[in-house]
Image (cartoon, rainbow, N blue to C red; front, top):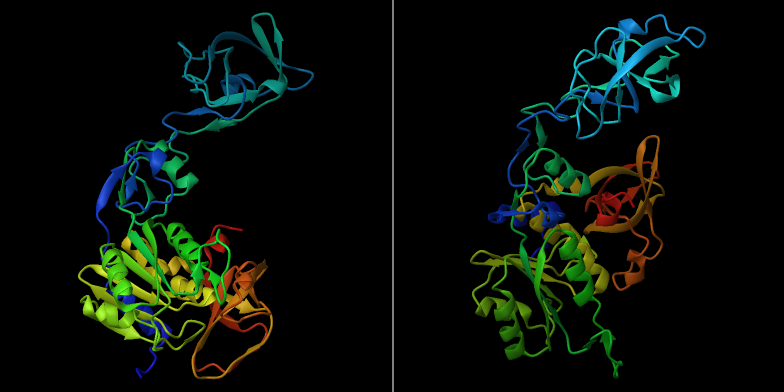
Length: 409
């Protein structure tokens, strides 16, 4: 039997075979979750003009330098500047222009007095406070300067990023095509979630968790299929999923009498890169390629499937879409001691907290590979290396964030 490969070596082998997907342009209304294919550079400043941070009056600071509650400055209101409708004239000596938040600062004005610090008196405004030049003024380019790189290539486009692209007028946006993923579950015992269970049957959760994980990683799931533990059916089903960018098979990859996936992959021309990983849970993991397709044979146990997906498949999908998989890993301190044998690495389901020193990872109590409910409270996987026998509370450990943790759950 093959010697298990270390998890970091396995990850490197996977990423070495990743090729970024093609670039396409999509409208910003469809860009959420995509990855930018080029640097986004502003061709002008934002805001594009000096504007008011307050509702009030645009003034010359020198005209209100001596103003106070008992000695207001009386200024003649000569125009109005409101959002989208600049004033038609400049501010002269002894004058003021009514102004709205975000409106263009008129020529001649160098400050804005809040409306709360004024009182109208016919065509005049009584200013009851002094202001210095620049008060309540937002300068052109204060947020984004002309020529500034707002987002780097590979950035994942969330709501704020999409808003930034809209601000600089980059619509449509050049993004990487979503990797196309096909999922196949294997096993006579698997029953769809909505159907009654027969003798010895279990419900097929992998056909729901894996597509969900793939979509969260930015992929397009093109098919979800099932095959019984039968050689010809397995070959036929694999032949269909191998047309995708990434093929994921759950179960049937081990060495039992009814495990047919490895043999079928070989018959279909898939080349093995590694088989078995020194990892708990998730040891019986297969990875290979056929042409440009990345093929992952994941274990059948529900937690093992999720762990191996997060450890090997998700990094590949992120890299294919032009991103950096390292952004999903951080260093944390263990909240409690953890012990294990030194035969393989452990991916420990953890709950995360943040204190003044950073992330704290608390191992969850139930770590069996069949205990899917343990993932409900998990924010991350703490990766304890093969050679490490024990970690004390407070020791540093690398953790792989689940998507809900990286999004600030």
